[in-house]
Length: 128
Image (cartoon, rainbow, N blue to C red; front, side, top):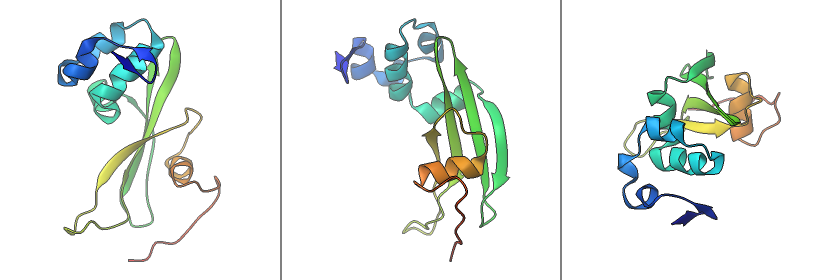
């Protein structure tokens, strides 16, 4: 099996729910490891490996944001920002999600701006 040109074990395609953190972290090939993390679920991987909390703050609506980092041997770190969507879903809830950002990010604000394709210093108001 191949994912984006990377040869991966059949398990990554046929039974991704059986991939373990230990298996991911023992994988020597960085490209295969990236696919395994993706198939495992990057946000789940961050939680299950107890990634390091780099920064936390609150958005304009008062919802918490957190910036997480997981260092990897022989590869660039995974850095993700955890946020609450400012848009209300049809059922009246707000979705919490994690999105990957470049490893150079140091604040939740900068990471949010990067995810929203905004300049690093840009500010905008939220209307409800």
